[in-house]
Length: 200
Image (cartoon, rainbow, N blue to C red; front, top):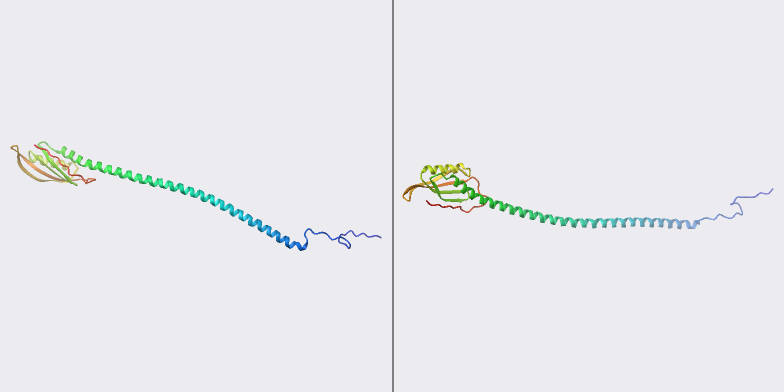
């Protein structure tokens, strides 16, 4: 009987070839680990480079926005300064108008309060103090005038009669008087003395 051994590893069979010899496996594994490390380092470097580029773009955009905001802030500061200047001018104009209205209101009120038989010689205003001098045909006219200007609301009560004297004007006896009153509200700005004179 003839026996045939078909097993490859049997005696006399050729050894199987290995893809990577045993003595080179360590070097191959080391090379593979080196390649993996290189790929990881390269990927991480690429990530850092991308992050740096993105950060630079963000910084550039932020700097541009900051420059824009600084320009806007400068314009806003100028606008606020201009507004404050205009408000100050408007306030000054209003104070001047009020200061002008004060003497006009005083003269108008006093003029409307003058009764028949009385005329004014002088009106002086210093701050809130007002002094009025004039002549009248009788003491009744003086008291009527005093009562009228006190009731006008422009002056604080009481309106005082300082002096009354009798004098002759063209051989006619008249009463010379002086009245003192305080304005109900102080003027917005110091007013120059208001003086008016008339003769009989």
